[in-house]
Amino acid sequence: MFEDFMVNAWEAGTIVAIIAGVVGFFVVLRGNSFLAHAVPHGAFAGAAGAVLIGVDPLIGLGVFAAGGALTISVLGRRARSDVITALSLAMMLGLGSFFLSRSSEYSAEVFSLLFGQILGVSSVQIVPMIVLGAVCLAAVGLLYRPLLIASVLPEMAPSRGVNPQIITVVFGFILACATTMSVPIVGALLMFALLVGPPAAARFVTRRPVTAIPLSVLLALVTIWASIALAYVSDWPVGFFVTAISALIYVAGRGVSALRRRVPASRNTARVEAEAVAA
Amino acid sequence: MGSDVAVASGGFLASPTVQTALILGGFVAAVTGIVGVFTVVRGQSFAGHALADLGSVGGAGAFLVSINQVWGFVGAGIIAALLMELIGVQRLKGRDVTTGVVLSLGMGVTALFLYWDTTIGSSSNAAVSVLFGSLFVVNPAVIGPVIGLSIASLVLIVAAYRWLLMSSLDTDLATARGVPVRLTGIMFLIALALAVELSSLTIGAILSTALLIGPAATALLLTRRFGLAALLSAAIAVATTWVGVWVSYESYNWGGPTNWPVSFCIVALIFLTYLAVRIGAHIHSRRLKPATEASAAPAVAKDAGRHVAEVMG
Image 1 (spheres, rainbow over the protein chains, first blue to last red):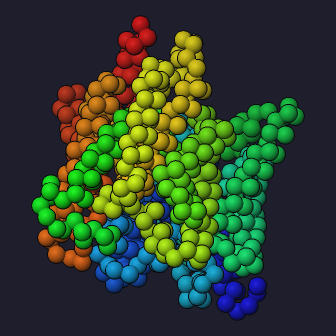
Image 2 (cartoon, rainbow over the protein chains, first blue to last red):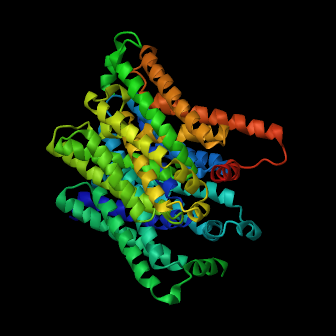
């Protein structure tokens, strides 16, 4: 399980889990699950297009992820953002099917872009991952406070000197960055599962961002490590284990929160959150 | 995608492949367009998209046990809809997380099924055909069930029309008027699952989302009357589908390895129509009242409020 060719998988999985745990916390906080689904899923079209014209797929992924996130945040400003997200996603996937029809033998690679190929990562792929991952974490760290304020108290944000619309665009780019680094390795599906399941579970357990973010990272790490081990042992696709374990963790988190709700002490969780931000 | 070559023989309307595509595509587009108006107004686009993707679990499962794919898609869609309802799709808060968890779990199971399909069976193209689909390669065995189930979906919508209208526009008011809001929600989700699975099966998961949301969002920009919006949405859906089929058919003469995928042609038309109408509506509203330009969503809600007063009064 820890042979040479598996070391890359463990490293890549660990990096992805850390990024997904941090970025995913804000995805769940902002109610952006649909965006988190659409950006990685739609970005595969970029990879298909890049292969078609003979460019590095990573560039295609990056362009489509950033372009998709930008389109959604700009068009979504004056309309229901879920409608715009759905339309943009369909358009990107449509373009993907167009690019695929232009080149002949690509189905296997599409399959791996959607469902991941973490057990076949080469050490070359790890480097851009670390760079883009560091950019992501730096952006979140730099914008931590405005991001929290714009996400939890959007109507109060302008009085604190934060423009929620700019934050929406910036967060779209952070998501695009996280997507570009991880989709070639773990697949759109697995990335989405990690962006939603573990952070949502963490937020059931604690509402304080300072504890929820590390917990979210920890749960994402547990998910991916257990999945790699199980996939290695069983030879089943790693995506299945990641999504199943994420869902289990989510259900467990909900269970914890349901049990705790019987105890009246932590009744007003929303207030705790607002206080944590205001402090 | 490879089988699209068959389309090239014969004239456009004379080709049986095109005839099937036009009839089945038009039928599914009309039903999806009508259901879409409620989906957009209820803010359930993500659920609609998730259900389309989740049909592929059933599709991949049906490949595995070799039963008719219709039952795989529809079964998976209804189970997913009930699961979402059970774990709280009706509450606005946290709804998208719930949808996301169900969606990703479903996709994970799809990955497993496709893995079994490709290792146990020999259908290596299962993944692509389940995910992308094509109107030009519809299996004749699915046509009957698809039309029957589309009608079932429409019947559900018509039966619950008044309840649906009231609970979609103002939940509190509907509850006060004695509308069974939760039952209405479940009926709608089942109708949505049926419509979305059928279009996902016949024209692919990509196109299904575009047909569900695009024409409905376009129609709601043009009119705020519910009934009219539903008819307009169905008309736009059918028109874009037919034009898309024609463009895809014609594109065979434009060079390149194959014709343009029909899903891409229709999605592009839907997206461009929406953008054009949106820009038109923007210019129109700016010319009418330059100072008080309201954003689209509140305006719909406000006018819808007036409309619900008419319905209830």
